[in-house]
Length: 76
Image 1 (spheres, rainbow, N blue to C red):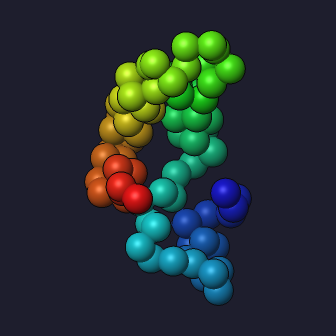
Image 2 (cartoon, rainbow, N blue to C red; image 1 turned 30 degrees about the vertical axis):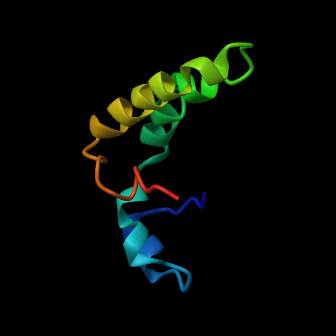
């Protein structure tokens, strides 16, 4: 993750990748999204039993910011 002063500063960065524009969010939004259960509960013994449910929590949080496109659900 890279932090920039503004979206304009990000776009002027030589390493800017337009295909990742959907991942451009303010730090406060990232903090909220990364507070999802998929990250908070990763040390629990039954984590893998619930990981799909935890990821849904993460995707719901992203959707609150209008971030629900294919960038976030890319399958590898």
